[in-house]
Image 1 (tube, helix red, strand yellow):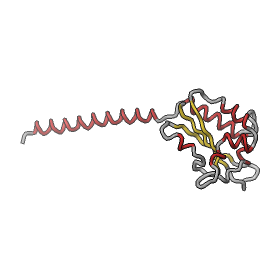
Image 2: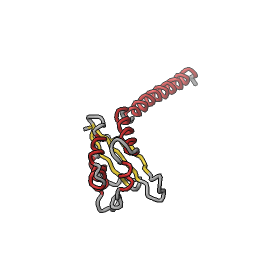
Image 3: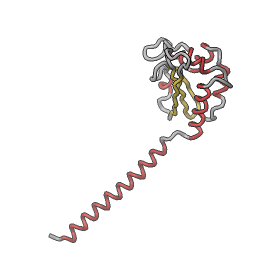
Image 4: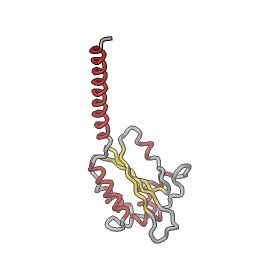
Length: 162
């Protein structure tokens, strides 16, 4: 048996494994970078959701969210469109201008959708409209601090490129 030939084969196999490992590491790292939320989108979503959770500059959006009727939303709900933020703030609470002013602070080049739900699952048909798009989403839970027996609300904000 030729020991030199055997060692050369082992050496070649080790080199191939190391090379493939390096290539996979580089490709995996690049894929992870593409999945990150752009910083301007993240900052905009954080700012908008923070303003919704506080009472202040844009009206009483927090109180509106807590008193909104979202009983017809969700799986098997009769009117999921009523749970979109535009309808909640304008029709249920009369605070459409406050919500519109808040949404005008968002970054340009992105469209948005928003929903107020009583459960953690999406309660509108927003996801059906966004099948072919890269969508960035963020969620906050808003609970009543004065009466903990009342059901909390989930506010979800979607952003995608125009």
